[in-house]
Length: 212
Image (cartoon, rainbow, N blue to C red; front, side, top):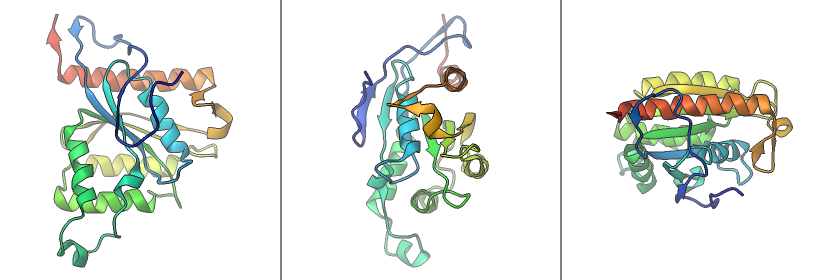
């Protein structure tokens, strides 16, 4: 059974231990990881994918965010002069407290969703390099065969601009064909996602590595 409650900002303990294949003779540490999809829809397939991956992160502490908790007025310089919304600071605090970030990008008109772009606009005005020192596993999915590949290209470029380090990324195609009842059904895609997760977790542990 899936161990997370699907509510905003729930502190979670994931269900199984991550592979240690990539880091021999290293003492592993529990990391703080946030995971979220970039749609505010209650039925977001990218939120479902991010939540699934959160459940595969071993014994690390994972917080599943809901983007709808960070809805703000559309950014403008005039509004900024009146002060930053509390939600912008709250989202930035979540980023700063995390060792790693799992984000699954929803694609609207070949681009970020309006809601996510607006969060980025506000947060980047507080700190342009708000992803500095953060390692990211970037995902996307869509009903079609390209799996959100267009927004993935945009995301990889933007996250680098914000000084984040994307250590692994994957676009899952044809979501409804491969994802059922909260899990990936295709063994081939399961293996690909598991490999991306291993790379992500290994990169986090390399940062905190202590010789055995």
